Image (tube, rainbow, N blue to C red; front, side, top):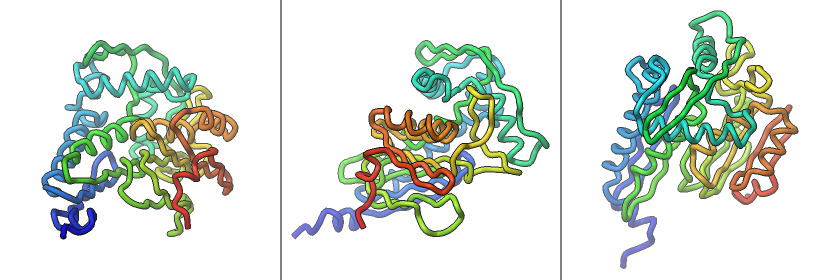
Length: 289
């Protein structure tokens, strides 16, 4: 007798890795055939991509792009193309042209300078295959972590194996129920998700200093999330969930609800002034209790 599929997975292997990546903690959980090798491959994938995409690393491809105005890198090109897509689809609310703002804002949040940025940039960026050219520093931060989660989760794929990757609130489709973290610092989750879609959470509670957080809206030239938290589940991939969680966190409540409602393959939970606002289908991704 072979036993249940779950018991077979457990006999073959059950591995968990935890490591620091993208200024947050990444977690990999794999069960099944060659689970440890798959988890190691996922970690190596994440760390390799971080080295290429870290704008604070002078040796990274993104730093080369900022310095030289061009780079040939397939991962940067993929992310830039997606960023330009979201720029168009959100009427500029998601804006990858603000690399200088993003870097200066992160420097402020780390306590390495005294004031946050106040001026926003305009510029052009183009891609051709793996080649990217730009005349302005780019902010790929709203996509990079989701992209890394996607690529790391691909490394887990294999016959007789299942698993997921999470990184600071962004995750591939969970293999079991997952809690949505409260923005109020308590241990009670906002919701328990049971979904096969990708998940991302953003909001003012994640990184802040003196009332300033890491979210900005270049269309209004303002810094600061408009909501306590935004949790998105997206059908397409984690990069889309990451981008839309960031975008919705920056918009007014009215605009957030409108964009979330019209975006196909997206459901969202927005916590605004202590009140929960959900899209029509969000509860289909919530565990029945």
